[in-house]
Image (cartoon, rainbow, N blue to C red; front, side):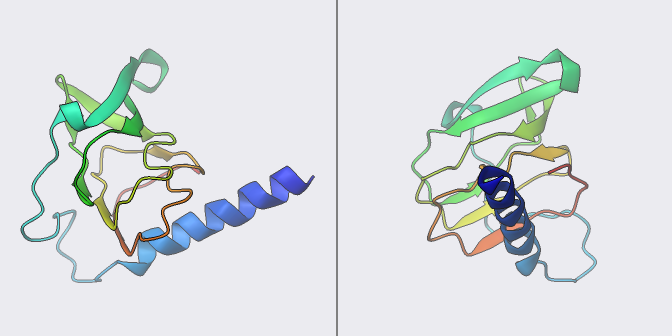
Length: 123
């Protein structure tokens, strides 16, 4: 029971963090100015046929400002699992292609101050 309550609280916290950086400017899903897309080599990932796309499982890069690519190896990035757990990131841009974010995706990211995402997700 405690684990379920913790999971719900963590999911709500992630949603709050994701939308606290929302500018409301109506500019679609444009990344923040000057934030270049990180290369695929900055991520551990795998293709998941059931989700018709790439699941990012870990961020291995060194930048603290991250822009997740919309596609890797020609396939859309659709899932972020525990990718950033415990990393030192402070900002992340998530493309519209992502439709599922694991509740532990940003656990332990104590310096995270900005998440930009304007798509539709499942928690």
